[in-house]
Length: 587
Image 1 (cartoon, rainbow, N blue to C red):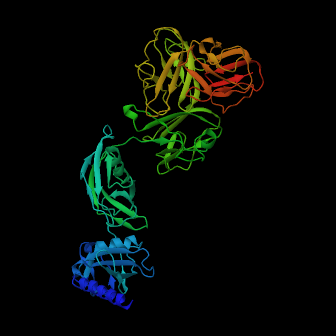
Image 2 (cartoon, rainbow, N blue to C red):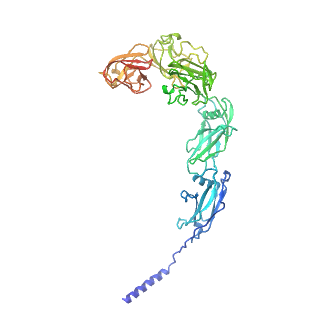
Image 3 (cartoon, helix red, strand yellow):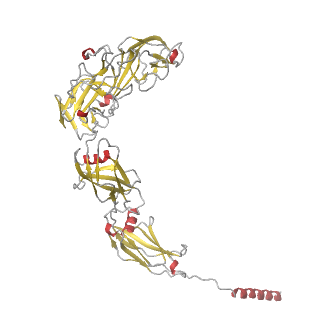
């Protein structure tokens, strides 16, 4: 046993000897923590220091047993006392020092949420390691008082001089482009383009929003013109406007770019006029009275002599309604008045005492107004009134359907005709009290002219339905269609096929836009009214909110809506459809 053991030991020694003949494995000694120092303990860079080294850090060699040119160093910066939980870093390799430019340090401070111009303490430390991040050592912590600065965008303008015209209002005028503010900041930045009259130092600054993430804003002639007008440069003159970009970080830091100037030749834009007042909530114009933001807009009279001066509206007003005129949807430019005269910012409200439809006309250049009956009628050789305005009302009147909307039926012969809103011809005065006649040389759907040509002569005599439509205040127009029949269609009639226009009963026309019919109705079903024997013809839907009341007129609408509900009890009923009053009554 002893002999065997000895041999075994000898053999093992030979293996060890063989190993010792190989090259020795490298042995790495442990390093030591570097010692960090700073060139200053207080730093407050300015924009001029953006590219300059404003603070330097150096450290002792951690003495790793490797090529020092591969040693990794990570400089960490955080708010004092935060234990580097939100550190901002800079990494260098193989050197024992580094510096930060004003912009590098500023980006770190901004990302830490520091306030501009406010000194705050930061902690700085160094982590050394091999290049693969092994064997990490931390240095001591150095404290520095640091103050961030505003690092704004650099703004440039495509043009330094522009010309605007009303005809080319929608065309491109100018582009403003800018660089990113607070370079290196990783949070969201909101930009707005600000402007004011030159030399005013943005004392009355106005703003144009910018789409998020974009670093430019394209403006058409209308918007460039508006910036000039808003800066106090009158329409039709030339003036200079200053622009700058405001940048706001997610933490509330604000920086303003350089200022650029643009000389603008302005024009008088389209002015918008509104009618805020005490009637708005009751009439369905918003949830607040006296609110220009939701008040109805007046029609622009586009005749050359009164364009951007004369405005009017046909509107229903409740008793004792009061109102004013505003130019734009604010109270900045508003008019009250009395006795036909408007007063800028006048304390006296315009008013009516009796409920009804009114035509309200204003001229914001001559500061005059007129309030008269709001109506529309047929006149001309093709109509029963002939060319005699005093014969128009009430027998040849259209019905008031809604604000700036009339619908009416009348019998036409083969002759000329017009629409008119008073019982006399216009006198050519182009004043607020003048009669307005309407015509067009175009077919149904065409734009109307004020006190212009007649409509095309009727080629086939008969009853026609005419709609005067001023709901688009920039384009009043008319619609015309045969008014020979009116049918009741739906699934609410006993013994009548459901929703079959051709098989549905026809109403009887009694004149003045009134149709009647007596027929059995099923309970709680639906009907509507169709001006023809097939779908696609003119039709009326419910505008009463689903009322099933008997004997009370329900409002109707032809511009789309739900079907009418039949009564809650089946039976024989008489239906009266009044197109002039825009109502339907079931008895």
